[in-house]
Picture 1 (cartoon, helix red, strand yellow):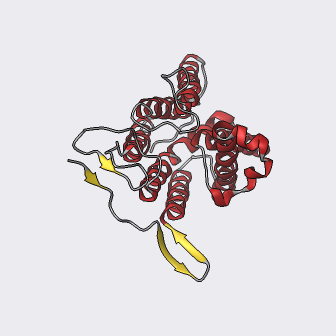
Picture 2: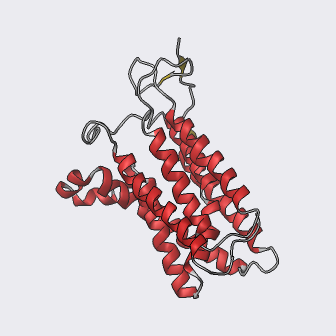
Length: 267
């Protein structure tokens, strides 16, 4: 027995040529939560943040997510096609976003913001880290509604037959990622920031947590058909997650060993 994929129209409604899709709405939900949570943190006494700084940071972050996500997808997953068709980079109508690329985009945005506003880089990273998981949760639900990025075939009772995944039941890996990379990771960061932490430790915990969760889920997520498994055992998602695990763990160790003032505010 397998679960049937729920019949959810990816398009919520259309007005003339304009279509509002669930996937786009999920991006808006993620950004809306980030704005609300960031302003909530900034409003606390001695937070060191103003509403104007939060607004600018979120704008930089949005650009980082969108530009980094697109460039990352093209370079990490469609590089050979990009070499043959460079304009594919701008064909956003054909879709394709990479979280790892988006992460690099956000890190770049954080660096630019910290430099222009003369803020401590690690403190900005710690401020941003808890804003991300809810957006990941929403985005993975959007993937599920679109019936994309499904998992490998399985015989578990909750296996699901996806419209584009053939007749066999598959892991609903989008929901696994929504749960682990979204809900669980947010709870971990929320609990961790209940007490002041060394600068860099919150951002490091995010990198470590996401990298570990993504690496594990990749074992049940269907590899990209044109890439497959490298060496027959590791996917591109796992390859890209390993540097996050190493960087996150290293940042946490460095944060606790290096004497510095605590800057992370209570959640």
